[in-house]
Amino acid sequence: MDTQQQRKERLDRGIKVRTDGLYALMGWQELGYLTLPRLILIVGMLALPLLMPGMYWQRVITIVCIYALLALSFDFLAHFVGLVSLGGAFFIGVGGYFSAIFNASFGIPPLFSIPMATVSGAIVCTLLLIPCLPLRGVYFAIVTLMYPLALARVIEATDILGGTDGIMGIDSFSNSWVEQYVAIVLVLLFLFGLRRLVNTDIGLVVRAVKDNDQAVRASGMSVNFYKAGAVFIASGIGCLGGACLVHIYMWAGISLFALDFSILPIAATVIGGSGTLVGPVLGCLILVPISELLRDFGTLRIVFYAILLVCFVVFRSEGLMVYGERKYHQFERWVKV
Amino acid sequence: MLEASGLMVFYENMLALNNVRVRCDDNQIVGVFGANSAGKSTLMYALSGIMEDIKKKEAMAGGERITIMGEIRFMGQDIMALKPSLRAKQGIVLCPERRRIFSESSVLENLRIGGYLATTSQAKETMEYVFQIFPALVKLKKRTGGFLSGGEQQMLAIGRALMAQPKLLLLDEPLLGLSPLMQAILIRGTKVIRDQRKIAVMVTEQYARPVLPIVDYAFILENGAAVMEGTRDELLSNPDIRSAYFGV
Image 1 (cartoon, each protein chain N blue to C red):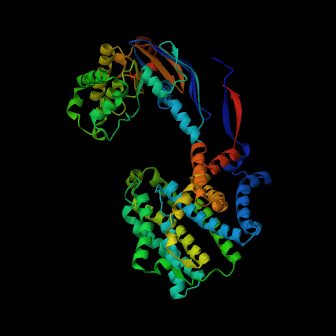
Image 2: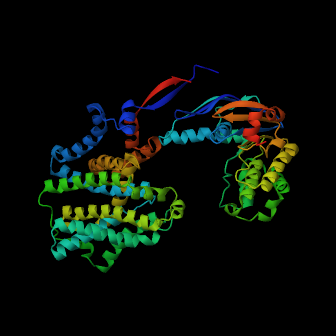
Image 3: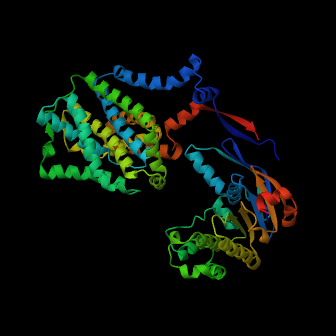
């Protein structure tokens, strides 16, 4: 046996084991190890509007947050419930139109119209999606992709809800700071909320549905009920994004059903690391500004975009966040076999 | 024919195979016996090269880091660096655990897929041979693979492996979850294949008794290490081995 052979060993850091398994938070070091990554994210997000050079980039931050909400909802559905959703545009559109109607037609202020649009939008989305929940496979993805396409054409053809002109005269947020901080706080709230949720008992059942729905059924639980619940939460998050968006733009039109809202969150999830929930937010923070920077190149930016995505899938299919987490928690060394 | 030495496989930091040495001579049926998690399937994957493929996929997805070390010689040639497809071309064909038949293809199609490496005349001849040793499959030619019973699926899996014209057939737990009657049919079939086609066979099992009558030589795996080896009689003379793996 050749003793010169070496192999790279991967071990958990001592501090990770101490803080993770034993909860021995005895010093600032351990406390810092646990809270620092979270603090960096929270403080960093909250500081973003202050760091941005002008109105234009501040608006970009808000858009980043809207996409981050969509990416969160995609990641939650895809990696914790097992439903691949291409329905970002669907959720944004439904939520957006609801909020626009509440605000423009009934004069309800944004403070109330946004939550109302979130709930009613989530109900409508869930009801429309319930018929395809019992199926496994690509059907959910297809249906969620078709709804926004169909709804946009219906609005265009029948001229309801303002037709191609859209609904105008929607109230905006009182100022741009409120607008940015509302979006940022919502992202943080749902990020940490969802992380909590997937570890509660209900979250465990939902994750079990993804792993093996027959075993869940055999345990006496209704798979469709839990799936519908998860779709309600995810579509609610999406609708919330849409509702905020129409108040930012002060306009609701069929461009709310644009395919960008479906595709970009998926790309962000791939880059950020799927199944981490933080990863998609990070992915949006990278992708959306990049796509703004590339705006000068016109349609050529799609090419850069596509190349970036392909590179990520081929070379780092785990995603940034999974990679970063591993580096943070583990160290590597060469050992003799 | 096949000789592996110093074979080590790590899943991350877990040692799945520890310095294992196995060999299989021409025209021999070799048994590899061990409990769950002893490393039987890992050994089969390492020999057939599927491990290289698993390793590559895990590395791309940033999952477990798999390390494979050691030496595998097949017909005097070092095959450690060969891809699984090339190893199959050389004649090492794996019939995987849990059968893994193509469940949406018919029996006939499954066999034809297995015969991808064979020439047309070889495939025709082998297919007739498969139906001859497993006559139960004849009536099921058109049946979809997923609708076969466990035993029929196992027959099909062995038949599919035969279609690739193996020189060494690796059977990973062929008796898993089958009735004693079906086990007897498969064991008889395996012996016939060895006798008539001159194919060396390496078969893994947890419970050695049904396989015992046909094996010429056997290895005992425990916690990833080959702790015992010997002919049938040598193993039977050891009381611990007798009670643990042969149930007598």
